[in-house]
Length: 522
Image (cartoon, rainbow, N blue to C red; front, top):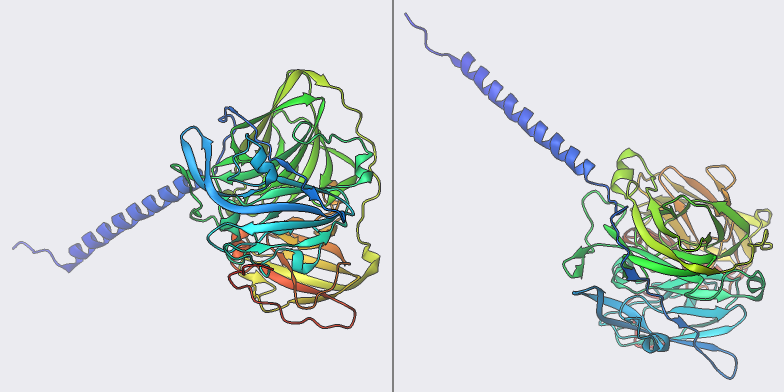
């Protein structure tokens, strides 16, 4: 008699089927993951034709009034910019009398380079022609809190702002950009940024290249991504550092080249990207002299072939050229973070940024001085207090930003030591308004030469600890705070920011004004 199939063979077939399905799913997932990982890096090395002459932002020196005040006029405007033939993109930019007079500058993206002398009184007449509030923050500038341009100094749509201060710091490459709480990344990406150069007699005597746009060249580097004619500002999957683009622009120029007519050219590098870290060098690995960082010149030139800049950091480098040669400013993979973080946070990415083209005959350049002089840095022996700052994407020291909360009260004239730690697993950096600090130690060791100058922004990758010395000698204001924050702008927008008030000895901090939506005038 023939036996019929029982439940056991059917169960076996079901198990075999489920196993096959599971294996198929795992295979697809693993394959997709492998593809996702393999295609996560970005490289433009060897792929850029360098067909566009580098745009040089117009130099805006303002007008000097009878009392010696240097007055700048800046307008925030919306417009369209042609980044390539047939590619017209909606953008924002800063206008000024200098941009209006320069036919080569579109005036609808980025802004002019402002320039003032140490000791000068300055006033900036800011007019907001946008349809939403914004601010203008003077990044790296030592000035009163009410003039700082942080999120408490909003300028409403159609409004105006008239900050004024006395320039009281050494020659340096600074910059300006919006700082509206929760919207800084978007406003900077649209094009609101520019350089602010401070000069002084001491630096001028050194004989460094100083002919703006010729042998002293602003290099404002941003990463971008286009969706047709428009910017694509979206954050890709796994990019928890923020926006990462797939190509770079310099001074709003795609595929740029710069003609060099001098033996030595000074490049003022500014990382104006919102999240990307660059490791700048040259395609032929030539050495160059690093002469300045965020807050001014180093004590002596540092011979190197790489300089790493996180968002907001600056560096001044001197590059020696030979007649008729060409070389490419390149960003190599900066690394940072663990294996996974490095891959998806831009750590494996590389870019050809700018081509330098030397003329057949070059103007001779004097030798670079062996020393530039003493650097104005705070002394750790003067420190009266220490503070600790733990960086996490969710906030600093466990707290997200609150506009009406002052997180630290600092006495005017005090020197403090701040220890900044990143145990978040995510790339960060740390920027402090108003002061130029000294990097005392990195992971318990003396800082490398490139971190021994005046700094206002410092890279703090995962697992890193930096110890900073800061002196707070600006004017006190118990009710209007300065900011400290991560300068990866989506982190800042998400609340990775705190506030400190500078007060007279024995005084208490007050209550900050509301951030609001801006106001029509000040």
